[in-house]
Length: 115
Image (cartoon, rainbow, N blue to C red; front, side, top):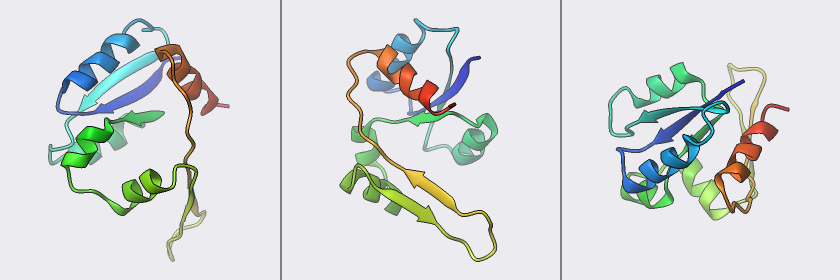
């Protein structure tokens, strides 16, 4: 089954490079480009329901940073528990670091998320 992956970019060289590597594995990944500057970018990501969202840290640095991004960047192995008074269950966001040597390593990470 192909996994939905969003590349959050305005078609930078980084994004094009990542996309070209993923295109070597069309049976495993379906790519979507979403420009983070578009007003409907969040809605588009939500509609896609991706297994992963990929962005370049250099691109992220040029935009306004959010608290979540800052926390994940500062604490690479953090676990964030999002509590909301009117929501049950709670949302748990985990972060981990992995070494990637080739695109297959990234595909393996996506497969881990399905287990």
